[in-house]
Image (cartoon, rainbow, N blue to C red):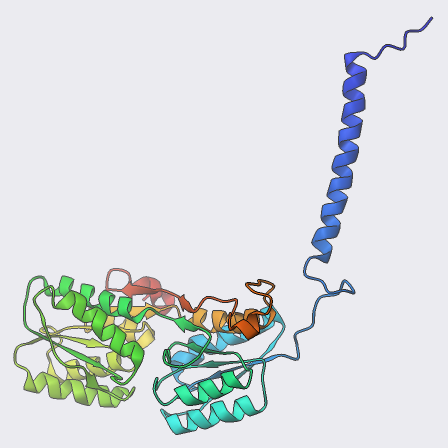
Length: 346
């Protein structure tokens, strides 16, 4: 008579078959979950192609923006499947910028990004857009007194600290006066001046009152030239907008004082990098500009579509499901690493 007792091998076979079956069923379930993740009720991907996100800035076609901000806007638009529009005056025209914000808000896009070159004049149009139900974030230059949902850009206090650290190192113990040049009405420049002072003054340097260059390299060169002539005990110059560094470089070359004055600047475009390579500037502090546009669109998109909830009705409660500040970071370029940043490496 054949025994029906199960051997250890039989038990293992039976258990193995059951385990394999359960694993197969679990895998099939996971496949189904992956396929339907993010899908709508019909199982198809949501269509956001009708949503328009608008980037508004004075000097909207500044080479700096065309090289970094604009391409990043188009890239993130393709990623999310939305539309982006780039607009604003071609000069530093704040009234025209205000009109652009108002006209854009009137046609009710999905969201607006504002480059807040004038942090006082832009408060009202930003607030009006917010009150009409349009999400607004500031990028690059903040308007902190407004009701903007978030600021996406550089920590300008840190940027000032980086410039001062590079200058103090290059001065190697020399003392004297240091000039600051930029757009002095801008909140971000004011934060950078504070950051610079926090390091430079501790090092025994005398930091002069910031001077206006209107975001124009020719004006920056004129202002820098006047300072060079009027300040015999000047040891350093620091620039705080994209056009200041080239202006300072022009003035230093024209006066032949490049070897005596330690100069630094914000931004690390080709013209800034060449000045570092040539020893006219000792440091250029670059911003991760592509991230401004990338996270600007994504912040607005999340403000509209996030599944995160804090209350029964976040909109009525005044809670927005995005961070209020996105600091994107910066980096310092000197003669030691400039070749990594220059096109072609030199």
